[in-house]
Each structure stands twice: as C-alpha cells, then as structure tokens.
Length: 128
Image (cartoon, rainbow, N blue to C red; front, side, top):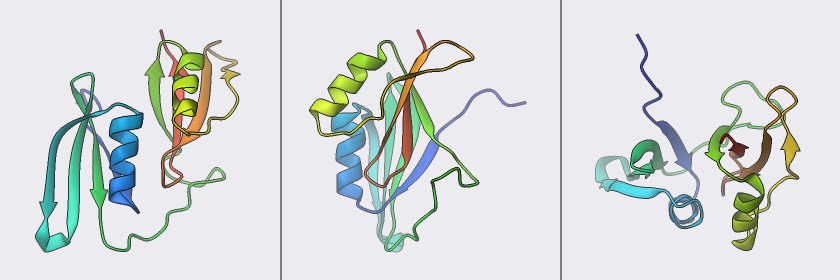
C-alpha cells in the first residue's frame, strides 16, 4: 500500500531564520513558496536532490513542543551523507554545533546529531 515518504512538515518559530538554515546551510532547494493571507502563514516546499521532502510552515505564535529527552513523538529527521566528518566540518564552519561523531553498533556506520533553529533534532548518517 505505502510506496514512500512523501514529505515532512516542520512548523517554525522564526520563518526567515529557518528558511535560511534549510536552504543556505543545508542546501535544500526551494520548489515553491506561498503566503497564505487567511492563515497569516508561509508554506515553503523544499527539495533535496530534486526530491520534494520538507514543507516548512510559519504560524503566528505556535506552541512549543517537547522534543527532548526521549519525548514521545517524532524523535529526529535523518539525512544520508557520504562523509559524516566532512558534513560536520561544513555545518560547523557555518556556526552549526554538532555532537561528536559516533558509530552505530548495529550497522557500524558513522552518525551525529545537530539541531535546526527551533531545536528539532537532525541527524547525519553515513549511508554510502
């Protein structure tokens, strides 16, 4: 029945800051951006390597969501990379703090975590 994940929706506390983070720092491509006046809300569609993956939303005064430690719900969003250390170096050169690189004891692959501007946990996973 299911074929793939279509997209992930993220609500931001500061739309412009998050738009800059996901496009300039992470390099996602803007597919479409629209301001929905009736909702006082932006919707930004983002792609990675031509694949639509994230909807970035702004809403007036969104409530905070508990995300750590180990709260129930979405735990993190993971991005596949060829070289974790190189990706960490790129992020840190742009002011994004990353956790130390670890090894997944099950797959023996390298990974690390960092956060988006709202504290959403993001992962880099050496998948190639």
